[in-house]
Amino acid sequence: MFDEHYVCLSSTTHPRIRQAPTLASWLKEQQVMVQWDGTGHAEMERYLARSGIQLRTKMLLPSFLGVGNIVASTELLATVPEQVATWCAAAFSCVAWPLPMPCPSFTIRQVWHQRYHHDPGLIWLRQQLAQLTQAG
Image (cartoon, rainbow, N blue to C red; front, side, top):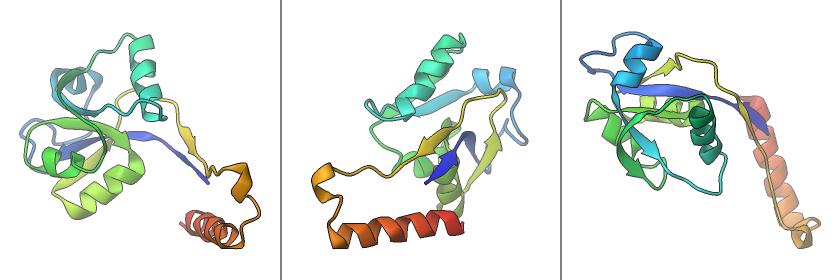
């Protein structure tokens, strides 16, 4: 459907992050992390580990739903997909920054069970989702 990449999310009132963080400043800050095994987000954690980067994790969440509120009301940073950051910035007092290091992008895909491949309602739904992501 589309390619996605990670960004750094901070509060708009963060006392130390007033511009895109450097690698040193990003590593000094405590982070809220989403621990979501079995998804592409776990690949980001593996990438950081392979790169020798260890973030200062203060809080673990099971999903992205609470990230915006937590980041907006604390000094914690979050490394999140850009689409999540865009939503958080619109709903909370958050700002997205480029990560201070190159990170691989990833692809968001539609996946469904083979038995539903010819279901007319699901064909319609898949087409609508594809059109929405291509329009943006």
